[in-house]
Image (cartoon, rainbow, N blue to C red; front, side):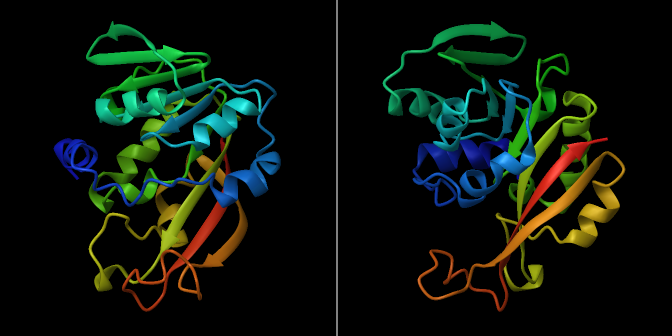
Length: 216
């Protein structure tokens, strides 16, 4: 997807991907990630997710990157914070009370940031196949060896629906992610069950998988 697609989505309020509640996988399984105490957590394509607040409450500083300035400013406004502002290259950097959000293109993010873990709930599934492998390589460059993380994927028959979100099957992870990251499956959720918010997704199958990942 072109960057303007996401900026426009936030500007027009087309943000069905934004969750009001803290993510199930994060609350239930973050302890299994075994992130070092206080390690800065990288949140790619962070939006204005309240998952960042939950992680901050666990003692982690947060480093996010997001194309939409609207989303980043909205996050701080949700918390009643007025962020400091700085320019770093092509990025506007907003920061306050342990949160640092880089407004700009993920692929241009400096690779000298102090990061200790990663949380990807909706990043890898937001990217089409053509650029997804570049995203994995970018993660590998910004994270130090041994850095752990939590990643959430979706799997469905891609021919039945256009993304985003896109289907990211385990076979794709085997091919494109395994050279840089190990992974451990935490569990599988059927998202077409009774009462599930994604029940009307429009595909014959839809499962969500959670993984602990670790930079090799």
